[in-house]
Image 1 (cartoon, chains in turn blue, brown):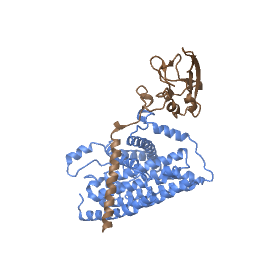
Image 2 (cartoon, chains in turn red, blue; image 1 turned 30 degrees about the horizontal axis):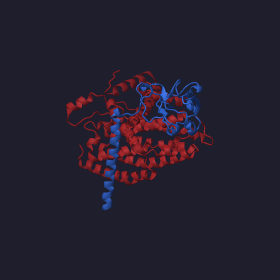
Image 3 (cartoon, one colour; image 1 turned 180 degrees about the horizontal axis):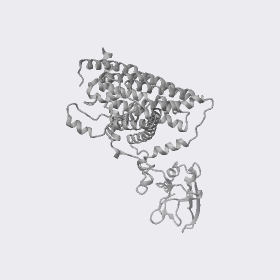
Image 4 (cartoon, chains in turn cyan, blue; image 1 turned 90 degrees about the horizontal axis):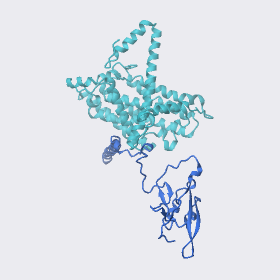
Length: 362
Length: 160
C-alpha cells in the first residue's frame, strides 16, 4: 500500500481493492460507507470545534481583547469544555410545541451539511463523491438547510423563533439567486460542473486570474451573497441577537442548540471551500502558466495544505465581515440583493460569456 | 442618465467605505500589541488602579499618626444608607474648656454604595478614596472597619 501526501488516489484504490478482495461486494460497500462516514463525522466535529475557537479568537483580536485563554494553552480546549457543558445540559421540552418537527429540525440542518461536504475535493484523490454536476448538487443541497431553519422556527411555538425563521427564509431564497449566478459565471469559464475537472482546469493559473475582471466581480459577489446565505453577520437577521434573542433557535437547549451552532460554522466552512475551489484553485498549488521551475517549487507544498490555507483565508475574510459591519435592516438587505447584486451579476455573466466566446481568457 | 451615473458612483462609494472599515479591523487584527485587556490575577504585583478609582473609604494619616478628622459627624449625617458611625469623645483643654474629638470612625464597607458623599461633604478633607478593591472575606464582621488608627490625634491647625 503506497501512501503519498501529494496524491491520495493510489491509497484509496488500495483500500478499495483490499476490501473487495476480502469481503462480498455488498459488505465491502457497507464497510466503505462506514469508513467514509466515520472520517467525515470526526473531521466535522473537530473542524466545528476549531472554527468556534477561531471565531472567538479572531473577534477578540479585532476588538483588542485577548479572547479565551484559560483552558489549555492559549485557551485551545475552551470549545471542548463548552461542548461537554452542552452535552450535559437538559433538553427542555416546549409546551405546545410540535414535538416531531422540533426534534427533527436540528438533524435536517446537520444532514444537509454532510451532504454538501461530501462533494468537496480536499486534495488530489481525497474526494468522497465526484459528480459530473458537482456544483449543481452542492447548490441544490445547501439550499435545503432553510427547511431545517423554517421547521425549527415554526415548531417552537414562539414568536421570536417564527419571525427569525421567516426572515431567514426570505433572505436565503433571494440570496441563493446571487450565489448561483456568480457560480454560473465561473462555470462558463471552466466549461464543466465537475469539481475535479474544475480544479484540474486551474493547473496553469487560478480562475480568479484567468477570468479577468468578471471573475473578480463574481468572487466579490459570491462572498457577499454566500455570507448572507449562511445567515452570518452583517446579514444575521435570522438570529438578530439584539432583536430576537436568538431567532429560530431561541427555544433549543443543550446538544440540539449545539447542532444549530455547529452547522452555522460548518456552512461557513462549506461556502469558503466552494469559493476556494472555484476561484482560488482548490487544492491546486499556485501555478503560473509556462513558469515550469516556479510551478515545480510550488508543487512541493502538499495540496491539502494549499486547500486548508485558502479555505481558512476565506473563512477569516467572512469573520472580518461579521466583526466590521453593523447588521442590515430587512429592506436594506433586499435592496442590496435585488437592486445591486442581481443586475451586476446578470451583466457579469454576459461579459464572461463574451470573453470566453472570443477566447480572451488565459 | 444622471441616475445611471449615480447608481455606479453609489456602488463605488459603498465599496471604498466598506474597504476602509475592513482595513481598520484588519489593522487591529494584525497588531496584537494594542491589546488593552489586563490579565488580572497574573498582574496583581504591578497592577495600579487609576487615580479616581473608588475602592473603599479611607482616612489618610501622616507620618506622626495624625489625621484631619474633627469628629463633626457631617459624613454620618450625609451617608444615605448609614454606613458610617461616629463615636465622639470630650477632652479637657489646658484653658479649662472641653473640646470634642473623634473616638472611633466606624465604616461599614458591607453597606457602602461608594457614592462618595462623605468625602465630598467633609469640611476638613479628612476622608479619601483608597485603591484597594479585593474586599472578599469569609466573615461579615471583617467588613466593619475603624478608620482612625489607634492612638492617633488630630493635626493641630485644623479648624472646625
